[in-house]
Image 1 (cartoon, rainbow, N blue to C red):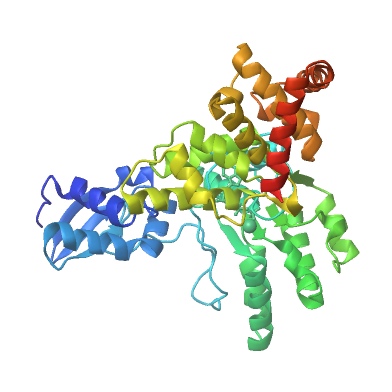
Image 2 (image 1 turned 120 degrees about the vertical axis):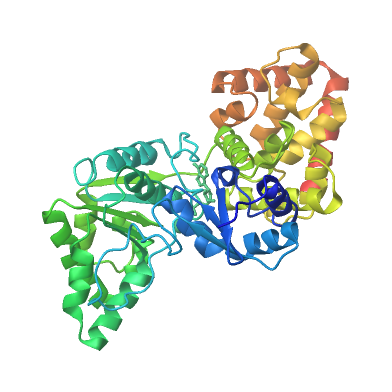
Length: 448
Ligand code: ADP
Ligand code: MG
């Protein structure tokens, strides 16, 4: 068995970063090249979730990199600490040979951990409950039901609970599947006359996690079966974790008995993240991707996109992609150019959004975005910031709290004070009044 040259790993990582930057994660640093035998490079991965993820999603890219940096036609395998050449036993898959193939479990993404989850006002309860469930499955909150709009972190939390339990107990039998997989498995088992195996499969796990349970709506037979699965698990003190796009009682065509079961544990709603949470999420994602962002870039992206986190990430990916293609570092100007024609930015219904307001005000007064969003109180910044607040109140639907939070974490009384100050000054100072009008005109023209 031959050892690998010492520069193999740095070269491999450099190649991956250059050619597959989107795939790279900072935890790739923990992957250790083991040895090479018969043209096969073995890479050691200690964490089971990371191992499975790499085996499923990254073999091709790593193989290509290994071939390029060594100049040889190598194959590459990821292996866990306990094995030779065989893949690690999948820690979360339950059952034996006599069970039918019940569709695949969903792949856990190492990105979706508690560590990478940013807590803010919109998800605090859901996060706290999720950590409690992870610490005491079956006892803290059962069932645990998370609901909220698209791209707000439901799947992330479900996976974080799953991974956290698995990291403490590799033998935990956790079934983590999508609702579609459950219903498909059910129908296949009915057709194959293998309902016993189906029941055995789902009723003997330590924890059942089903994502997007609202897809049970209208599927009467699946609902019936799920009801019995749920009861069996619940009575045995096993944890059930569910996510949905709506609260139990708001899922159309869901049987009343299921609604009431879901409501008997903890139901936690996830709301849209506030500005500050969006900034931290962007910073967290950038760290995960080993991307360097100057502070004004997350501030800019978070101000521009407030719909959901998936779109926020999409914007970051786009900015990174443009920087990579141009071979330049990420800067505010680059981010602005990259997102200029982005239809996801919130220019809703011809209304100027907060970003347009900030753009217009920073251009007019020649101040920096980061200063506006900072705690600095210098007069040269305080006035433009007050103008921003005044415009934001007139032209957006944000509350006083949200506007205050956006502009340097100030409270609503500061915003009220700003509005009064600007109103008063407009009445007494004609030149100032004209200035504000000019900015406003500018805004409504570009915003339309
Ligand atoms: P949902 O299942 O609610 O549609 P996801 O869990 O798939 O949303 O989240 C969409 C993306 O946003 C994921 O990449 C996820 O990691 C990220 N995300 C959501 N909430 C957070 C958060 N609080 N902190 C960090 N990333 C988040
Ligand atoms: Mg989801």
